[in-house]
Each structure stands twice: as structure tokens, then as C-alpha cells.
Amino acid sequence: MNVVQRAYRYRFYPTAEQETILSQTFGCARFVYNHFLRVRTDAFYQEQRRIGYNETAKLLTKLKQQPDMAFLQEVSNVVLQQSLRNLDAAFKNFLQGRAQYPTFKKKHGKQSVRYTRSGFRWKDGQIYLAKMDEPLNIRWSRSFKGEPSSVTVSKDTVGRYFISILVEEEIKPLPVVNKMVGIDLGLKDAVILSEEEKIPNPSYLRKAERKLARAQRRLAKKQKGSKNRAKARLKVARLHAKIADSRKDWAHKLTSRLVNENQVLAVESLQVKNMVKNPNLAKAISDVGWADITRLLEYKANWYGRTFVQIDKFYPSSKRCSTCGHILDTLTLDVRSWTCPECGAEHCRDVNAAKNILSAGLAILAGADALRLHEKSTAGHAGA
Picture 1 (cartoon, rainbow, N blue to C red):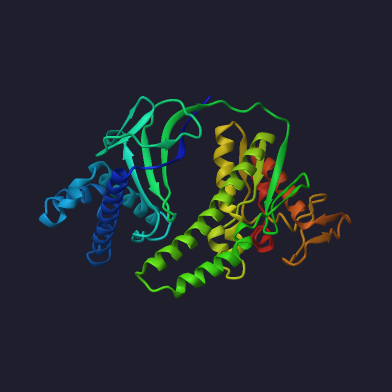
Picture 2 (cartoon, helix red, strand yellow):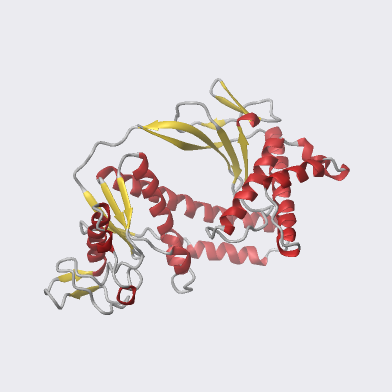
């Protein structure tokens, strides 16, 4: 049994009173985050010193005592402390090179607050948030075992409310299967398997581009601050939400299927953040969601007792012949099939890459790490 921290996400429908309390809570949490982002930024760039969570927590206590900041005492202090922790985590990610510098939260963007165990009650299968007398009207789409350790309440740009419940859960590993797969990621075909199966890219953004462009043009023509502009903004947000929901649903179904069917999953390692800097490919790469596919495969494999391995990003998966191992000097992106000059084998570029990814992944698992690398001068980037 694997013991994991698992989040269950549900939609809920607040009452008018709960909606007012949540609006205040979102606003205060956003204010605290933005206020101390400015404080930490000024200290970092003007005074050359770093402020951590403990110091901001003390400053928050003083801030709440100011007469013009009395509104901060009307919401749960747990939420405000978690907002400071989120800010601290954002700075740590920036300093360690995992993310960009923290940015200010917007009023019209996605709103989110986190309640730890002292900020909510779990009673008779219902959740009561701090400052609320009635339980949340949650649409329980699936069940979970155990008691929540924390909950995160969010409101998206469309105005939908969601609650994410974190619980500690035992997950039973899946039965062992005698099957392995190499996975190459592409644009026309989102996923190409070493078994020569190609899974098309659903291209949700491209299919909705005309509707989205029309809605955005109408939004651009509306007067700022008007009710018509608010309605037009909501239509654009709904289209974006539909695209994101469809892409997420597709990615979850695909990765669950791959994890269920295979014992070993070998995937290429891509620098997606660098690749989306290419203006010609950025939209297509973002639409297919490579990073999400890889992330979902990794954590699901760990949960269910599967083996997940990523090969080195410089491994020449496309230029290497999966039959004899010969490596081409060059292989441009427009070449989708090629014939090996050494053994005469004919290759589909993507299927050949998937087969090489599987071979390299198995070599890594066997401890022969040297087999997964080639001199960078001849390898180039994966998929080059």
C-alpha cells in the first residue's frame, strides 16, 4: 500500500451570505499577499535584505492593529497566514530557479484561499468554514476515506466555486503487467507510442479559436467599467474555461489508460518553458499540454506501483536508428520519415523516437546510464 496525500476537488454552491464572506476572504487574502509582496520586494532591491515568513507574520499582526486595516480582522486569520506561506513558497521557488519572480494577484483573476485544520470543521460528512454557520452545499461527485487535513476554496474567472479537500489515503498498487511503453510527445499527434499507436492532438484551442476571437473583439469594443464589458469578459472567460476543462479531462483519461496498461513508462524530457518562447510553436505547444501529460504520468505511476523514467533531454531519439543504433548527423523538423543509411530500415520519425525512448529508459533502469547519453555536439536537443 502506498500512503499519499490526495486532493479531491468538488464544485459547491454558496448561499448569498457565504458568497459575501468568501468575497471578503478572497479580497483580504489577496490584499495581504500583494502588500507583503511589495514589502519583500522593496527590502530585497532597495535595502539588499531578505524578509522571511516569520518577519512578515509579525508585520501582519501590527498591520491588523491599524485603524484603517480593521477589515482584516473580519476574516479568518488562518487564511491570512496561509497567504503569507504561499508568498514565502513563491519566493523560494524563484530563488531556487523553479519559477519566475512572484507577481501581484488580480481582482478579476482566479481567487483561492487555503484553510488548515483550525480553519474549518468536518462534521457528519459536511464542511463548515470559519466565520460560517451553515455547511457548504457541495456536489459530492465521488467519495473519499479519512478526514480532511486542509481544504482549498477557489473561484475561477467564470464565477464557479470549487473546494479541494486534502486527505491522507492508502492506494493499492495495480496488478503487475508484462508490458512496457516508450512515449514520444508531438504536436499533430499528441502522444506517439513505441507500439506504433498515434494518439491525435484534440486541439481544443484551435477548434475554439474563431469563437474566442469573436468574443475577444466584442470585449475590446466595450467601454471599460461598463456592465456590458463585464458580460463580454464573462463570455471570454467561459470559452477559456471550457477549453481548459476539456484539455484536463482528456489528459487525465489518456494518462490513466497508459498507467493502467503498462508496467514501465519511458518519456522524453522536454524543456517546455524554453520551447514556448518560439513564437511559431508557442500556441500549439501550450494547446497540447506536454507538461501536464508528463506530470500526470509521473504521479499516477508513483501512486499505482508503476515505473516512470525520463530520458536525458540531449538523447538523439529521432536521429538514432532503433534497429541498428546508427545516428544521423542532421535531421530537420520537416522530415517525418527516413531510411537508415547503415541498415536500410525505414522509420517513421515519431515512432522511431518512441522506440528509442523505451530502449534508453530500460537502459537507465538497468543501471547503464551511459547508454542514454551521447556527445552533446552530435546529439542536439531531443526531437531535433
